[in-house]
Length: 291
Image (spheres, helix red, strand yellow):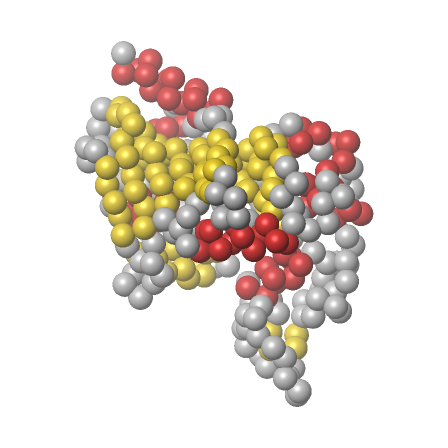
């Protein structure tokens, strides 16, 4: 299929398959399925222009280049802004990966090592070589990448550190992914640590995740009755409106840091991104009202 869709980003082809837009014998399929003689394949209309041919020019993406917090021969780390999708699509002309390929045309194998939700800001790891991508994927699968997030949630979270080990299942509702705790789901583990409290209204937390399931932090927080502030999918509508009076205009979830050891050398790597100014301003407003 990739050979027939020359010029279409591999990531976009995989997304078409995963979302069910590519049908084999009138049913959904997976990227790993190998076609057999006689299979009937339906492929939706797909533009074949390369991302390098889209209207956005590299000199208009300098602002994104300024958000690169680390780059070497193997990897690139971006402080992703909230509101920017990691992939382009029908409703998103240009995502992180397409934009960075425009900025780094010499990095022909540039790929995302993991993903962040569109509404989440912070540290995003990309591989510049296929060999590095394989290593990073293995580290992620084995839980050897320490990923930490900062989030503000509704209510008073219990004191200390809370570990949530609750499997998650993803279902499509109206074309959107909906995730909830379900014994039939995939293993998912998150650790929440209290950093600050704002009375009984809200709690600032640091979260580390041992697994990287879709919407994991958001689903786990909602499951225990303390949804992430500003989360329109799993959150509390009244709480979100209350937070708007403090200046919150998006989801309060930020990928603060990640770290791991390179298996070949044992050399430690870590990268971090400070809490963005818009989220700092929300905490400052809370502090002022608390005083």
